[in-house]
Image (cartoon, rainbow, N blue to C red):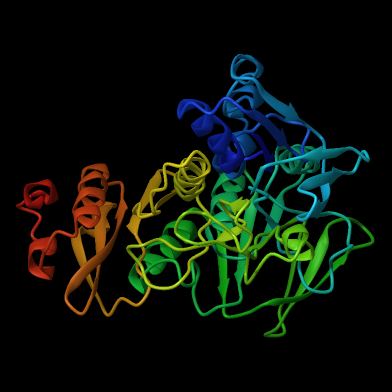
Length: 403
């Protein structure tokens, strides 16, 4: 049996590794568009951009790892076409590779600023090469405009501020981190950034960004203001890389649709990671998550399905974000919450926000509270019955409620 994996990120690597761990002895070919072996992306906006982490430290596994496991990695190679009937993939080099089972782990790409898709000089944070270009452009620069107040924009703002630049963050929604955290947590991070000298502009979108004749850029905002900066970084979300799958006739909607076993509408094709919109059995409907945990967990499920060890994807989602000396760790999905409880003192910069829906704990976001986070993952995973009053009681560690 031959397995072809399209995509060289966390999900693609995990599928290949899990297959070998489960005793799969067939051929494994992994295609990666980038010229780099699979690597960590979270440090790109933080330690790697700051210069505090060497590029070699980003690599998830050395070349020997793949050779020892007979995983054929094709770097700098793009899959351009899938023939489901013939069960072949075609690369940009004109090579045709046959498969018995195909896995899409194509990830996602940064969403461009509307109307500026071809504009030069605007930076994104998604790949190693993106950061190399940004670092080169930073030489001699004093100010930065971050368009988008989500995790990428805020992490980049924190890093660039640490590097000595004056940062401005523009977020189109009424507050930063929209749809990601509770309003009180968003307000906490807004104040934290402003205390570091970052200008936060909320409720205004960047409708136009023009290069200045003397260098730098000026962005016109929807509220009539103009913001000038030496460099501009776009962080307004991503687009799942599902075009090839869609062209092949696979069902797609905001990503490649998969079931709880990672299978697409074609029984010989699977998908995992940022490109997949799938089923997590602990939640209703379909969900597309952008996280290392999801990529790794969903990929392991796919590998199990391929070798006949089917197990539905039920893992609890978790995420993290580092901004200055603040470590935000999130357990569970807070969507649909109707009550929040603050555990601890926000002024102390070590606390948690507990999210409830109809009296049931559904998520906990922790700031500089690692013990809360570790306990939260276990509590939520087990579905432990815990009240808002218990969550707020800091005299009792959350771990004491774990059954």
